[in-house]
Each structure stands twice: as structure tokens, then as C-alpha cells.
Length: 290
Image 1 (cartoon, rainbow, N blue to C red):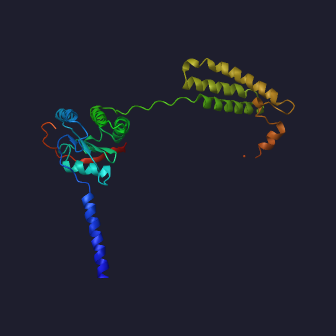
Image 2 (tube, rainbow, N blue to C red):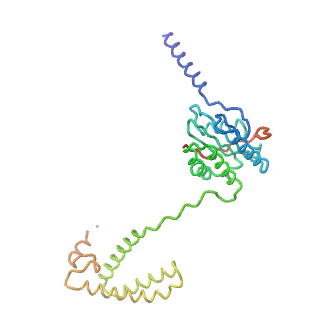
């Protein structure tokens, strides 16, 4: 029994040590741009780091890019939060930091936003930046262009007073569907008018349609109302007269029923980088993959 317990403890200790060894470790920061994979060229690193440094000097906001090889079985959300809070990205008491994390082997990325900037860089904007701006470049392994486009959009969102997410294109009108329902509606209306005892109901319906068009389309169409009243009276007169004939009506004057069967059916229904300023993450942002 003692040997069994000892063996179990040994296995548990081994698994615990392996888990610790494989746990995600927050690296030491190098600047506003941190490429631990050498994915970018020296020139690209200098250009990006210079832009991020100049942005911090102008606004005080700290935007950092981190490129790592692997998350080591960590989620991208947890890894981003660990990096953000360990490095304390953003100024103290302002929490005006943003982290753009990219994990190459995992093909995952995240924008983590500090408390102070959550109103300027919303989760919706972060999601749009990752999926609509960055992802197309990353799918082609064009990491520099994707990172550059992503950081530019992050800065644009932080500066802009309105959302940078484009308005969705209006849906195309389904004219076939509208015509189909108009046809069904016309047939139903004719069926009602044909069975009414008085043909003046068509004039009332025509007048109501004219008023609705005037209200919801244009007041200039008010003169259309008398025309619709006359057409409604004429339509009601024709279909009512047709309905009273021998017993069978055409489709447009009652839906194809006879008078008798109608009634029967109606019954059923890194540039001078001095470290970050002490900010903390607000948990906002967005994650994606490619």
C-alpha cells in the first residue's frame, strides 16, 4: 500500500513539474515592439518601434506589440492579461495601455485594452481590426503588413471620436419576394371585396391606401388618393358582380372557390524606451485566429 501511495505521489510530482515547465512565462520587455521570434527584419522593427514611440510621446498612450512563438498551452486571453499586468502597460492611474499580442505557432492574436481606453477602443472595434484588417495579411504570412495595418487602425480608433467600424451595406431589395407577397395580398383583397355585400368597400380600401402612401412615401402623392378611391370602387364592383354569377368565380374574384364550397371550407382552420508606466488591463478587447 505504501509503495502504491509513493508511486502515486511520484507520478503527481512529475506531472506537476512538467506542467510548471510548460507554463507560459512572461518575457522581459524590450520596448514598444517586442519580436521574440525574429519574424520582422531589422528595418521593419526600427520603423514600427519608432512609430509606437512617437505615438506615446504625442498622446501618452502606450501601445505595444508582442510577437511570441507559442502560448505554451495557455489561452491567448490569459497570456495577454499576464503580459499586460506584469509589464504594467499604460500610465499609472490612467490605465491607458493597449497590447497587441501575436502567437505564431498557435495562429492566435489578441488586442488587450486598459481600463482608461475601453471607451475609445471598443471590443467591437478590436474585433473588426483583428478579423477585417489584420487576418487577411496573416493568412498570407505577411506579418509586417498585418501588424502595421493593425496598429494604424488601433491608433485611428483611439484618436477618432466615432467608431471606425464601417456601416454594413444595406441589404438588396428582394423584388421577387415583394412581388410575390403583393400578388398574394392582391388576391386576398379581391377575395374579401368579392364577398362583401356592398361594393363601396373597395373605395374605402383605395382611400386608406392613398392616405398611407401620402404619410409614409410623400405628401406630394396626396392627389393619388381620389384616383385610388375610384379604382377601388371599380374593382369592388367588377369582382362583386362576377362573384354573384352562376356559382363559380375566377381566381381573382374569390380565390377559386364556388359559393357553396367557400362556406363549407370557412367552417374549418524601441527608441529611448524606459519601461511602461504602471497601468493595468481592463479585460476589454478581442481575440481571433488566422
